[in-house]
Image 1 (tube, rainbow, N blue to C red):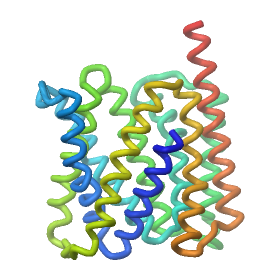
Image 2 (image 1 turned 90 degrees about the vertical axis):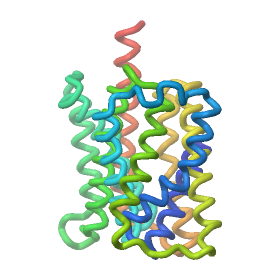
Image 3 (image 1 turned 30 degrees about the vertical axis):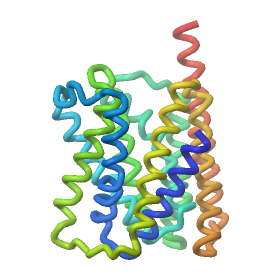
Length: 280
């Protein structure tokens, strides 16, 4: 999981660098286009192309739309915010997933977890600083919207997991983002010089290795034990911000991040206790 988070931090760094030179929709399309050959090779290696078209198309199309929005909004937010600020806001995603599971999957969430979700949202407000003294910017709201798209997409994965193979879910998400994102970005497409090839290669490899690593992590370890390591992204974000842009998060960002992470850790721990109670 630590390797996965590090790889995703490298991927996000590449996206931030690209977002300074290309439109957000084009960055989203490039993220998928670069990864598509590697994902296709992985699906072939797993022998998963059999039945590749026998999937729940409405759900996959919904995930494609959500994926394009998630990546484009995240790329737009990264143009204005540091990695640490973006990660601090995006960490609200687990709380959003828990809340949406009640609305969309009719799962039960007790009062303690609702309180944790509310505390997490307060942490987001601390980072955004809606008083106007800080950076209540379109960029910050874009990251929050991106996290919401991610949360809805995660709920659809739970539904798809009942009928579709994981390899098919990953493959069609990348294909739909590549095709849809490219089509939407085409009118304002900025030509890409050969000098960008190393950065695009890094984008593809980091995203692919990160996906393999996170899949391995959750297949070998309990989610409640593995998931908390995702918050190590903040450390990588701070490091990348300082190394490349000489920027450090201020005290409000760190306080908000601490509140959001604390809320997320409680939800993960509470989920483990809930599962153990149901399956002693």
